[in-house]
Image (cartoon, rainbow, N blue to C red; front, side, top):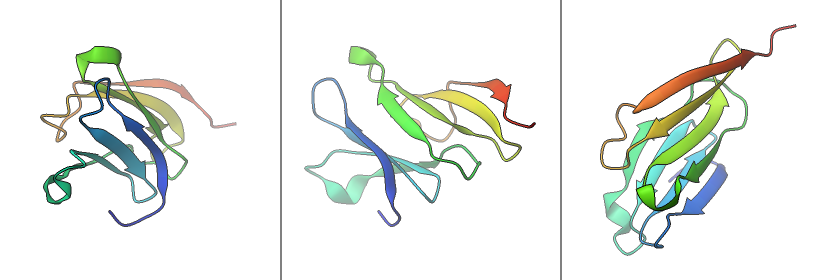
Length: 95
């Protein structure tokens, strides 16, 4: 995984590790099989992004920015990182 990692977190039972990096990539992988990482584009903005597992549901929630400086959150199912389950704009940082 190239790039500086902004956030990294283990899932509820410790079987998966999720990272989000400076290249705007969300990665989920089993650390016992490093060659099988699931990678997706995260938020498109250039500001720092974060992630967290949603308890034992095994879904991920991310926080980031749109290209227009709008804060967003998104929920991802790690079995299908290609499309978020939900994404919502929180507010705009334009002043």
